[in-house]
Image (cartoon, rainbow, N blue to C red):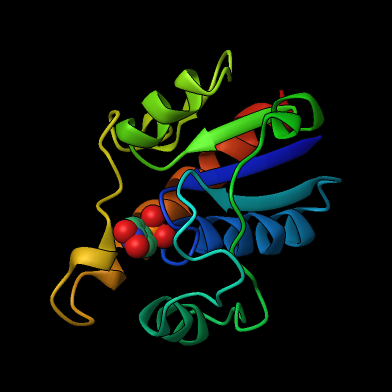
Length: 147
Ligand code: 4NP
């Protein structure tokens, strides 16, 4: 199974989802491929934002070598599951022709959007964002892979 996580810039939230999914799949022995991307083009080629790298490191994950890329229509053929981090991401994906994107918050947070930490004032809040993404990614994988 191939899973793609999508946010706006691919430098804050979706790299965390990708790393968490890869790590959890390894722990559980799930055979999956994961990737992440953004709907926007501003940060193509950039590494994840410093605070995402920091929270990832605190939680035992290294995302320092990730590079941002923009979503493309080919992704909708290549990936089995396309997962948006908030409802704006879902709307953008649908506009681009993605038929059935999943909202990550539907897997443990009652459909809540994962807030965009790019607009946070400082590091505060990255803990909550990580917790949300971790909870939902684990639930999503358990539901989609174990059933
Ligand atoms: P992300 O955060 O979608 O979680 O990667 C953002 C990063 C950059 C921008 C917006 C959101 N930006 O507008 O440049």
